[in-house]
Length: 130
Image (cartoon, rainbow, N blue to C red; front, side, top):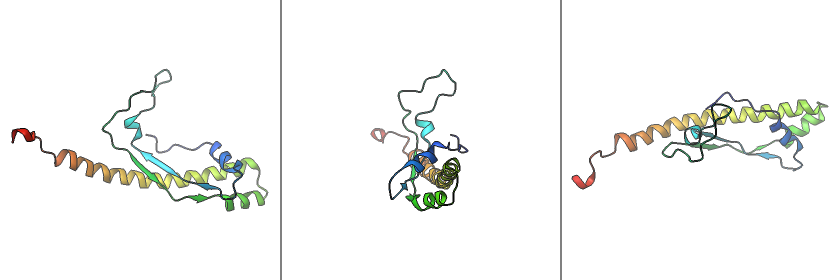
């Protein structure tokens, strides 16, 4: 998985074009999904239809972020719309990066616990034989 993935300006456009008074964004980050349903590696390759079961996926949901005050401040400062979108995109990017670090740490903890439970602590002799 690409951890250095940069968001494109469309994210900022979605936030900037929203007409809600409470402009809430809920950051969500998942780690390990590439093991379950990998993206095609080459241009002509198709994505698999059947997911690969038995892989660990960690999903972290961050705190909601209200972008309404920031958007009002940016527009009030006379910034061009393109700069506003870029700034909003950077804010979402930084929130996702922080959540990604948390998700990767939690994934490692969960992976250790999962391996201990299913590998180190599993009875290798079928119970019918004991």
